[in-house]
Amino acid sequence: MADEVEEEFEGDIEIVRPVAHDQLLALAFNRLFACVVSPCPDRLATDENLLNTTLRLLRSHTTSRLAAVGGLPCVAKAIQRLDDAADEQISLAELAALAGVSRFTLLRTFAREVGVTPLLRWTAGSIRWRLCCNVPASWG
Image (cartoon, rainbow, N blue to C red):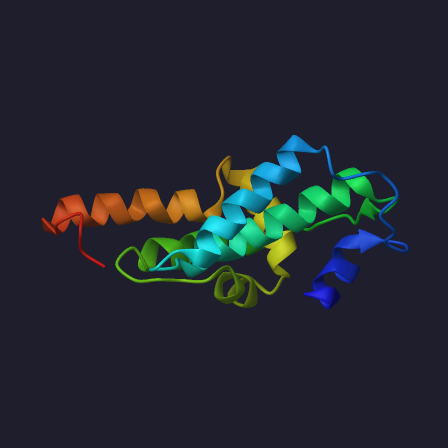
């Protein structure tokens, strides 16, 4: 993950602002913790929450700036894989590798281009697949 952080942010990363009272960061940590301790962890949800927590920390409490990102080609590859994987678990790392970008870049670019995170896109596709195939909601 350290390499991905270095790729995403320009300059040295130094936490310079107090984080103890950041309610949004606390919420992000709580979501991450819930994913990690879940009896049936969802890899995509865990990856997204880990990256969102890290991004929140780095965006709000460091002197670093986000590096410029590429656009649509990586998102198109991720969308195709998500649409093809409606009936299986998939990780953010797998999507990023397929798209040829870091997990940070994919998450940020995907949300900007599509309007939702890869997890929400996959969840919607999974629900459509279950309805189409009459698969019970408890499946998986």
